Length: 216
Image (cartoon, rainbow, N blue to C red; front, side, top):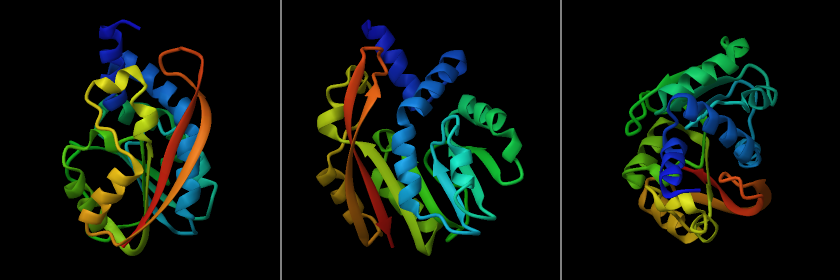
């Protein structure tokens, strides 16, 4: 891909916009589904849980979440107006259990101790103030709640051409240090591998990623 194409791809991975954003959102759901399902599994969802997903994309995985227990309430929050509209359209049948909220990406618009479970996949690269943002997640999570943060490891991500544009990459040690600076007290690290289709169309690649299960 040309440099300009890589920049456009990077921009749409961070904040999908317009027709290209819808296309990239669909691709992200397809290539990230393994990471999303591992994250959902790590949440250990139970009946009556209130669940927040930060950076939901097109939320093509919502049905899998809602099938895991009874009387769940899902909230998805995203900075992309395109993804907000696309997620609403794709998941219209679940409107009685799910809502999608558009926000500015810095402050979570929820009351303290509001959610039982929170998760996010492939968003940490774009957080402006990671420790402050972790503390805001801590604020809206219930005392016995679980937060799952999933990300591609730096040694893998640095070889992807689009990550040169506005991505901040992290190793397990980098993220552990950030979490230690936040209010969170406990964390479990689980490394995963999978084979996925390249976002630049260059065949299959082996992705190494981490699922962090974080508690108060």
